Image (tube, rainbow, N blue to C red; front, side, top):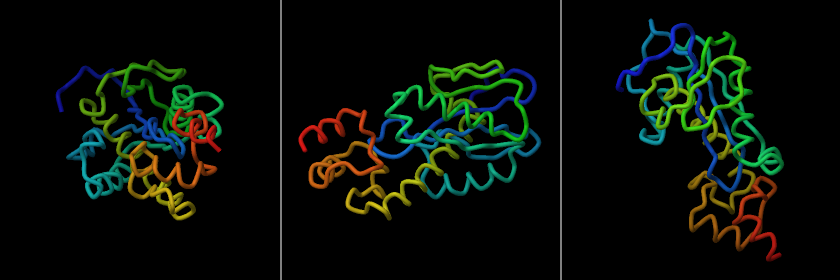
Length: 196
């Protein structure tokens, strides 16, 4: 990863998983890495295989100074909108850290409101190790949650598309209607509901 200037002190990386799907919660993670216990192979979770993500998630939990994963529910997404729900999940993740960070770096171009300095870094999950670690934790936790939802609502194929808007997901929505875990404020779901 290219070196960026990172502020001194305990910096937490923040990232989310699940802004784009039509179903399920949005999940955020905050991670403070330990420079003395480096983790090889950290990268944007989307560029890693599922096996590699799962293995790295275990190492992150073992070696990080502190980590926390939090979420905002489907109901919160529908009430607040996805951007504000994502920021809420990020705030919850930082608040849940066992060690208070001195600053935060967040993937993307929007920052949650925090009581510490925070900076947004576009494509930060490919540039900053702590953000990459947060992206891995958020992705693995959200994928596990979608597998639980798949067991409850197997007709939608959540185990394959994780709630994202694929052709198979659209077909299932058309055939079965929206489940209680679908985001009713999202256009494709709202459109389907209006057809009922």
